[in-house]
View 1: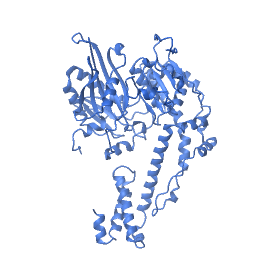
View 2: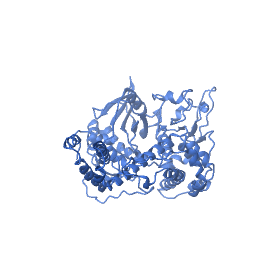
View 3: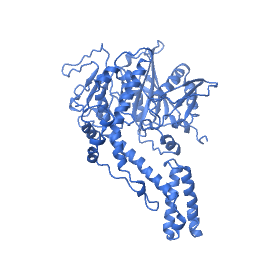
Length: 550
């Protein structure tokens, strides 16, 4: 069923579309915002305006695409809807909607125009969304922005109305999305998908639209983004895994944002939970937060453009790792009082690596691949290597966590569900001798030291909270299944009205959780419980039945 209110479907994909232009008096300014009812705070508007243009954009002639990420204002107090629960039910954690940040997908155009006083046409179209679908929105803005530049605001409005007709982004379904005379076929991945496989199959090719498919909505080309620092990929994987701060310096926002996304995705299927910025400028409202000497950024992955090199040349006082992606011809002129920073591509870090690098893999990755799909093949190899490394790291944690789950025989239908045992880091470390990553990975090194660092990170905290919540839901589901097989009518004969009413309310609460997609329980179990609920309710006096029916 279609939502009653307009823009409901649009808001499931995008927050708004912004057009940022250069004003001779104001500088970068918001020219257009659609839909018109959308509100942005002053801080958000300012940040979007500065991030919508490449810093020092004299070298960015033509069209440029990149991404940024900003904090959401407290102006928005969102609550999860049934659709949100349905969309997130089977969605990988790396693709969940971000409730605290917006992603900005930028299409910037700069061309000479003698009719303008400045001599250049400079304007950006920005898609603002809570969804980290980087490839998908890159293609969407690539369709919308050129049409807008050629034909003006009506094209932008028409595109937004098309998006408002799209179905919800539910994982596992092939979605047909009409947009400006095109028909896009996309599929949101699920948790059950086998990594590295493309399960998008289009059988219906009869359409009035020009049709094309997008095989991945989020994966960036890892090899293309990290080819300049291949000898250091294992060091980078560790730094991202433990949430250590990294500064990426690159010659363009496109290279910078792609490199950041490659780093963040290197620990998939884990979600990177510290702060990160694919693109950043000194005008950002949070710039001082990253550069002040009183706040060591232990839980950030701030990503900064190449022109911050002077600001961060003395950043050795903080535990930063510098990742520099620079063209060979780069030359920096710096004041004599400021320390010189080598502009060559590479890693500059005091971090001591726990694991040894896999030299054979790096050697194999750098060999020549023939054909047009060279980068794709090498990127697939690199993605699989990172996945195997991350899974080898996570499997012992998952195995230990499973041991904290109460046995099914301990679940009593007439008592509250049992609770999980607490996660004890030292107990987990003791399991590594017999059940450690050495069982699935040939990588040598101090795995225990890496686990201890990881367990101090935001990535571990998020993983543990999410897994505990999933296991607690599983316990409730098992408890409901046991309750559905219990003879509650016989139980009622020995209980007071207060106890029966309490049971009615608890069963009703659990059924409502299932119907709002917050619990995964079979339809058969829910129907059995509903029947038992009706039966025990009928044992109560008429006045109580009337109260419970309200």
